[in-house]
Length: 114
Length: 114
Image (tube, rainbow over all chains, first blue to last red; front, side, top):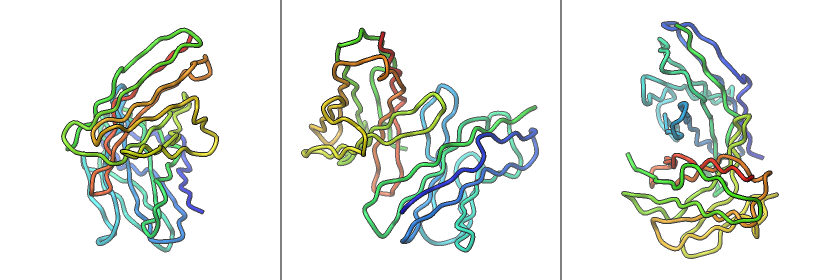
């Protein structure tokens, strides 16, 4: 069965510090992995995805994520956090070998303090 | 990037009435659109997959007769909440997928049933 876990409801980071938002997954086939962000009063936006290729994926707004097959993880990272990065972040996964739909994580609220 | 327009952004209605929410892909054709419900505690729940020219595929636990979905064209899907009740009050979001696996989201509709 497919599943995705975001173990942290909330992550607090000081501005300028590196940030990590964790995501682990479980699929039976090839994982297609995604990060989406929901800013306050704005719609959900695509950040980045991993389907194949380089394990380190770079996305919008300076974010990146690393696909780790052995640990079944796809953590979202940014070297230096900005206050404007404060938002709700969703990890999603689907089994690329099937027609199953995306499975969404519960979301992690990221708070960047000045 | 692609744009998905969702209307209305907010609707208040009386219990027992029906509400229609529209979702349009403005600059691309979407054979498949998705409808989500986002609860106050933030989790994103897939309600149904809307397929152009055919019946929607509903997720387990979602009432087909209550949440009517119509995907009449490649750019328009509608969700009608029939005989709305206060427990239907929620934030509803639509999305469409491009050929590159990315989802583009509407800005959402906040439904309040009095």
